[in-house]
Image (cartoon, rainbow, N blue to C red; front, top):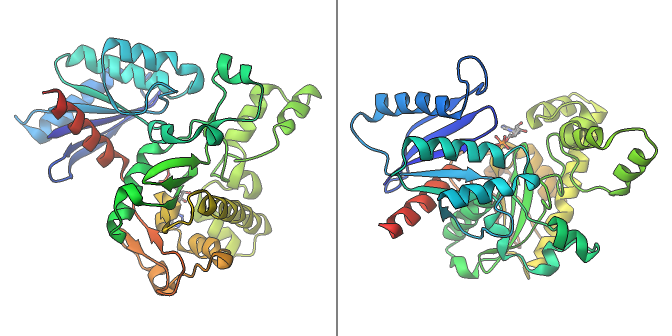
Length: 377
Ligand code: ADP
């Protein structure tokens, strides 16, 4: 099936056309500066997409559209066929994802208007984590915060963790329903997921993507009193703290650089801040891997994915080097090898196989969209 995959941001729209039968990418593109003079809104962005589609596909028609939606709240545990009611539900979740959900809704509305007959599917970043048990998603705070304000752990990057879990199980020849693994998605944003019986049972991002691992510009875990104390003392406003923790922290906070390649490069030239950033990020990740290994009842695989996970061999070496207590050992040659294929990078005697599995969220969105659109026919 020919599926258009859309990832709408507030000022940009990323798209791909995939043939789901062969998993082929027919075209990919990005419309930027939406809201500017040339592309006033998402409807105008779609005009640009349509021209590109027509130029490449000719008379072939798109059969379904899959939208990436960041937040599905507690309602959405699966992809859904989009109706006007679903768009309103996505908009109602805006307080939980103020930058993302309204943008996704704008893209969906523009498409509903333009191609009302085309099946459209919403695929949620949070959905894969809806299988977490309550003891993993609850914060130990008064019930009221959960019941009245939805304060709980949701988790993100679900589409990626789902896809990578499937590929890793396949590579190892383990049935997905029996698969136990720890999956580290390390991009600009980073999260790690505990997989048991092929499902997510815990993940490091929480109420928002701020929680968990040290990221490019996000702090990850910290003591919430840091925020309350600094705000109470009048040192910063709540908005400033939000900005500091999401935009100026993580690798950037410790080293001045948010891009892992630059951090590694600067550390190799002897920069103390960059070296510390790598140490803190690796140590935090090691703690999560150890914890999730216990949570899943003994992982059958430790899997690295996304920009840093797939390409950052020095960072993988540093992280796995600290997992000696688990009996994990890298094969140094396989670790430095460059490949776009899923592969094992641990030594044969490693107690747990270590894998690199390239993620492909668009492929997963296209596949889920096609499955739902076919079921509706
Ligand atoms: P996003 O979350 O924006 O999708 P990506 O998955 O593309 O991010 O990951 C971006 C991160 O991957 C950046 O920190 C970048 O430095 C890092 N990265 C890309 N290539 C390499 C590499 N060869 N070595 C180390 N890090 C890399």
